[in-house]
Length: 137
Image (cartoon, rainbow, N blue to C red):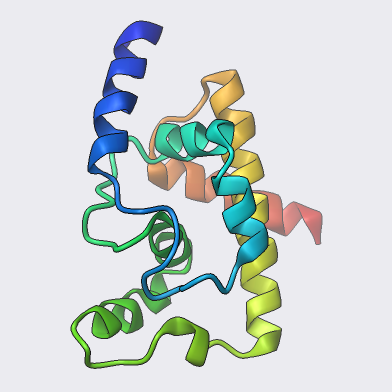
């Protein structure tokens, strides 16, 4: 895919993705949201998630949170169907801190991969992300 083709795909995808914030995560990760309001991080996330559908989420924040922490998908979708609470009511302060740090790191990795144009798939990106967390400890 050429650079111009990728930019065209990005333009189309931006129109079909949900709002940046809100949904089940409802502004509980302001530091992550601050990064997502920067175009270069939006582009980076779209690049690493180019084969993923964000349409099943109400916000990009819900997408990144649930796709990185898949054990929370069900709670998120229960909230969407009015059968559960927003995630901000379910996540403990200790877990919030961990999730916040993980998502900030994930966006930085996406940004780096986007700059290098080096990402095979979302699962490959998640593997790189998990490996970076292991090597950081």
